[in-house]
Amino acid sequence: MTGARTDWALEGEGLTRRFGGFVALDNVSIALRPGEIRGLIGPNGAGKSTLMDVLSGRGAASGGRVRLLGQDIGALPARLRRRAGLARSFQKTNIFPDLTVEQQVRLAARAAEADNAAEVLDALNLTALAQRRGADIGYGDQRRLDLALALVGRPRVLLLDEPAAGLSMSESLTLAALLRDLAARWQVTVLIVEHDMEVIFSICSHLTVLHLGRILAEGSPDEVRAMPEVITAYLGSSAA
Amino acid sequence: MSIKRGVFPIVLLAIAIAGGVLPTLVGSALLLTLLTQAVINAILASGVGFLVRQNGLVSFGHAGFFGLGAYIVALSATYHVMPIGFALALAILAPALLALLLGLAILRLVGVAFSMLTLAVAQAFYELVLHWRELANGDDGIAAELPPRILGLDLAMFQQPGSMFLICWAMLILLLFGLRLLVESPFGTLTLAIRENEERARFIGFETIVPRAIVYAISAAIAALAGVLFTLYNGFVTPNVLYWSLSGEALVMAVIGGTRAVWGPALGAVIFFLFKDAAGDLTEHWPAIIGGTLIVVTVLLPRGVSGTITMLLERLGARAP
Image 1 (cartoon, each protein chain N blue to C red):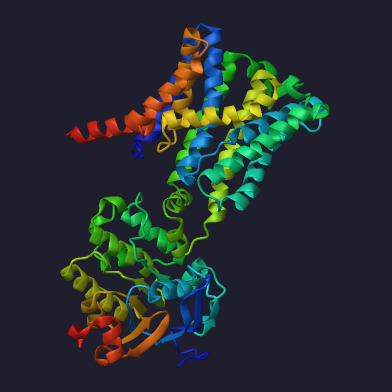
Image 2 (image 1 turned 90 degrees about the vertical axis):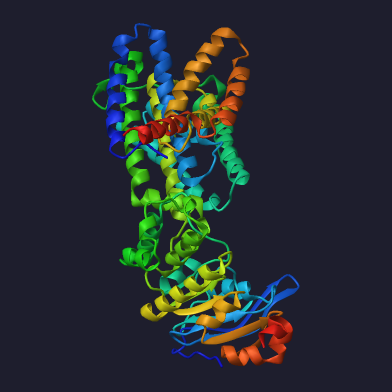
């Protein structure tokens, strides 16, 4: 599946992550085509966030390679991976509480040497909140701001760790639609971890299922939904 | 929260003018001496407060930079190592450079670990001047043999409370104006962002240690400036200018004044000095009164005096039609 192909947007090859004697990721390989929205699902403790951390540079891999557009970025710190075009958001809202919404997006634009701060504010419906402090806006707005910080500069690949966590069903689906629209418009490849299957099935063209640090299955949403091992390990019989 | 952008220069100008006429209104040389010392300490406290504001870090070692600045001027003048102008520049730049290099090494530490290391470094300098008698005359201190003219001004201008108050006051006003420009600059926004969420700053593409080290260096330079003014005014330094209790006092001033506004620590220093003087008249146990006051201020005014003033002004502004 993998190999040093330059036509993959993002490629993790043989990624392993150990914490002492515990193996959180065990020789995991994953490759994303440009423009695809890939869902990464699995039960708690499967290694999803660990994989996101290893890909984004938040945690070092114990073994394996990470390539972005064919370039090996495994040795780069997170900030340089971001500058190379790999952005991420976090499981918990990760913004700058005391800065205004506009200050935060402009700061991210400065780091990315981009001039699309106003465009991103507008695209994520944050323009009206531009002068409000991050701490003073609603939770749903903070999640969109978190996404805005990652999207400034139009990264080539975006890693999203549970972007809909804590949102209502309607907010989640609105965010999913927005995400699908922006990814298509700005040609961003997305790897998304999400427990909300409505969100996953509504925007992902391809799914990877992790279980106990290994890849259990891959395929289209319909294929994955029908796999007995996935139903047993994660989805449950009602999803089939 | 801070005073609105357009209002700050006007308020600062009014305060500058008020301070400028103060020596003509204050007849007591003793009070002017006290006020001059208060302004020198206000500069030191501004350095400590700037570090808290922009880096979120508490230094227990700023007396080290204050004392280095003071001793570099005193030793350079006494041993005639270099022209006084160079000595003044070196006395500010050397502590700043030391802080920059130190910052690059220790700013990865957070909280108490950072504070303890700053304390250890300052105490190392204290022990150095205390025990190296051949260099700095140990705990007897040294009288700086300052030249008769410094930067075109008579030495007497620096050593008489009336004129020195004006010099220190002008330095403080310029410093606060400069700090205000700095915190509102893109660099100020970046360091504030790093203070709030360093991980996120890295993940949007910023290097985070160097900007924090620069803040630490600026803060050290401000403390060293205060040390330089101290030596010029007193013409005498002892190891006490490097002792941890001075770092602690500067921190108390910053806490009383509040660090969210750049002028808060300076206000805290003036309050601290006047209060200390008044408490000293009442009892020799004045530190207990200061300690009690600090507890009360911390509990009742968690944003410090400046934060409370700003909050009241904003409430008044919100009520105005």
